Image (cartoon, helix red, strand yellow):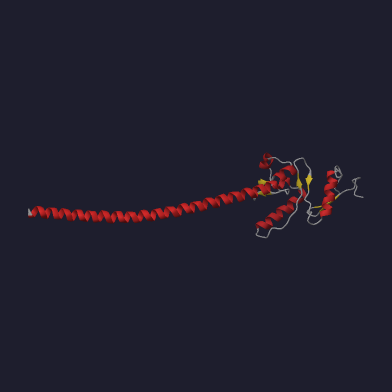
Length: 195
């Protein structure tokens, strides 16, 4: 009987040890589970913040895209080889090029020949690290027209008059008898002689 009591006591001790070990394991597991839940909650908050930031970025990008697409100015982006990456609607409308045209053309093919060398020089200057500066060029429209940039902020009345005469057809068929690239174009003589 003593042996049996000893055996029961040793089983009880083993059982108590096991229960203590199981309790300690469950307690550690509970702490790990609590830390994991806290970590998962923080991760979920971080994902919400990231999702909100991505949505804000997308909305901002969409607003910028709508602004560029609806701008009256001709807006373009080209790569280092002069291939078009983006042109806005006004650019296509004014110059008459299609997306297929833009896939095969470079910027230098739609710039008036008088401006190509100077534009190449300006691009190289910027690529050498110099600050970009305002640069005006004349574009060749798909139908051969020359499209010039007017500066209404510098000469608003002159620009308004040029637009009025152009819409009235005054310059149709008239020779531009004096052109200084990047500076001025002189015409208006209905005889085409410049006198």
